[in-house]
Amino acid sequence: MKVVPFFSNEEMSKERTERHVKMSRMSCMTKRLFDAVCSLIGLIVFSPVFLIVAILIKREDGGPVIFRQERVGYRGEIFTLFKFRSMSVTAEADGKPQLCEKDDKRLTKVGRFLRDHHLDELPQLWNVLKGEMSFVGPRPEREFFVKQISAINPDYELLYQLRPGLFSTATLYNGYTDTMEKMLERLRMDLNYLNTRSLWVDIKIIFLTAVSIISGKKF
Image (cartoon, rainbow, N blue to C red; front, side, top):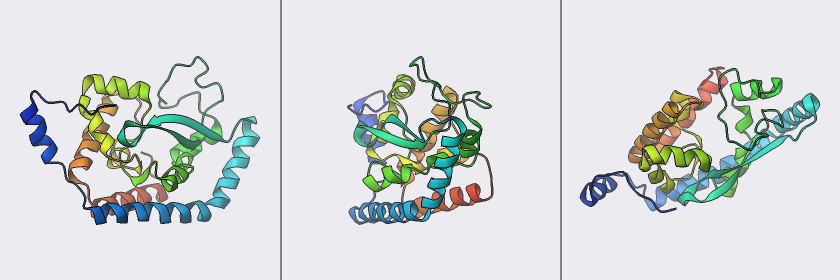
């Protein structure tokens, strides 16, 4: 997919693009090394949690433990995102993509707990290890919703410069996106991250997210 910035003319597009903060080659390499090492450590350290969650999900309804879904990622390429399944196996039986809403009846009991504490995202450590995602970056979205967001604000495609993230400022302060308004607000925050990103910014986002999760804050 070709990146088409949302500007009134070519000059404004060039000026906006030049304002993007480009991390140095060394910073990019450091970030990727951090992602690879920490995701591997995370998979090892949290392996007992993986086992416990898998048993709980399987005992509840006998369905699959891991949920796989295609998302739009780095350079606009499609990749398979992994999560612990938090909804019933018939959640989207009609084939129509649907956002998870507050008090969504499709959530299982175990799934609701996992989502409240963001434990359903743990399998994405594998996506990070593979290089499809990073610890910090814009949350990846399904192509169905990407098209809807881009129809309102084509600047969404500027995010293809970044690997999708496990953590983001948008997730921390905007929570799960269950409406188009929240999606557009998330886009605004993600574009701000694109323009201000640095290793220090990533460290702060990881720290604040970890504190929020450990303290039991719902977001």
